[in-house]
Amino acid sequence: MHSISLRFTQELTQRLNQMSIRSTRYKVALHKPLNQDQPQGHKLTEIQSENTVFAFNIMFERNNPESGWRFVTPLKFTD
Image 1 (cartoon, rainbow, N blue to C red):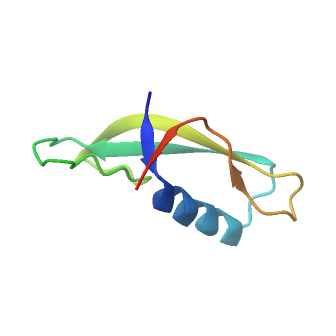
Image 2: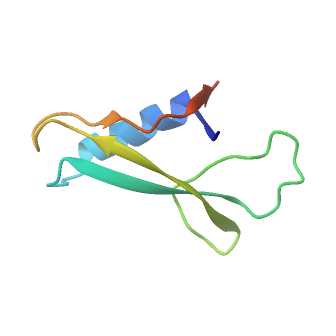
């Protein structure tokens, strides 16, 4: 099972709340660095670059376009 930092998901949620997205569901593709030599170096990012590779998608949803986003993908949280 994939794991993700709770702080990272909170930051993503805050950014989504500031964006003008019309739908009630939003998928975010996460990427990890190509070089996994660092200990605990599996830092995820939503930014795709030549130094990253696709890791997995996460999903956010909300009740209506005026309400706030909530994280809905079942994952384990890390600190």
